[in-house]
Amino acid sequence: MKPARIVHLVAHRGNAQEYPENTLPALQSALELGARFLEIDVHMSADGVPVVIHDADLGRTTGVEGHVYDKPVADLVHIEAAERQRFGARYAGTCIPTLADVAQLLEDRPEVTLFVEIKRASLARFGHDQVVPQVLEAVRPWRTQVVIISFDLPAVFRARQIGGYRIGWVLPQYDSHTRLKCEALQPEFLFCDVDKLGVGEPLWRGTWRWVIYEVTEIEQALSLAARGADFVETMAVRELGVAMRARGRTDQHA
Image 1 (cartoon, rainbow, N blue to C red):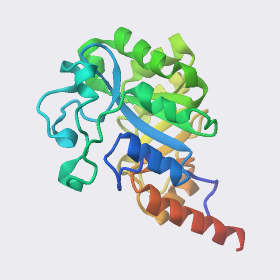
Image 2 (cartoon, one colour):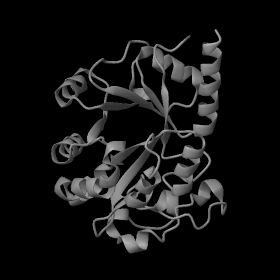
Image 3 (cartoon, rainbow, N blue to C red):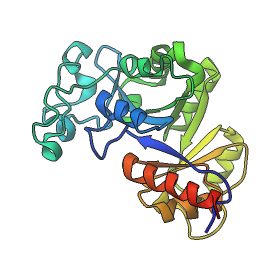
Image 4 (cartoon, one colour):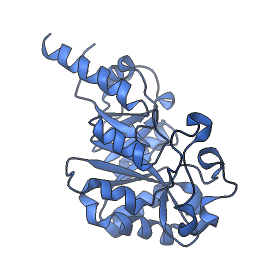
């Protein structure tokens, strides 16, 4: 099946299949593999600095007890995020980066887009009025290359309202009620877990572009493209990227 449109790859937490997720090495690897779209997760430190990590609980990726939002940034940036349960000591010394550190990767790379997901646990802890402006300020020098995304609808609306940023809503469900909210919000991007989609029918059409995540197989990516997806998001950046490029060459010569 040929895709209805070109589908692009988004590196989910960087090249998180081969490196500790949401770390500078994972993101640098994704760029070296040719990814032009990166997705990261952001929580707030106790002193109000955005840091790049998926879980509020530090345990899974760092082995340290406690929560991100209870520790100052001076402590967090020295906490190893090497995912030793997956990689052993291979990435020893790889620590939690700040959002500002990650945004520096955009320097001299105008072709790269960074999707920054604001996590709900930090919004609940500190409130939208504190979290959203701090995130926007950290990426302000690269605002044209940044898209603010979240499951939290008020957070992305506020990012557009106070900063004029492009926004993406991560859908909690794929149903008619959610669709009405999308039509009211008119985000530039919609993100959806592939497992939440129905089977076969075209994706909702609108002003947005679709990013479908948790995609690992080329045939799945092509099927989603035929349904209207613009992007597939994956941790398997190398494997899926190679398969997509090979399929593209095949289609060109078909």
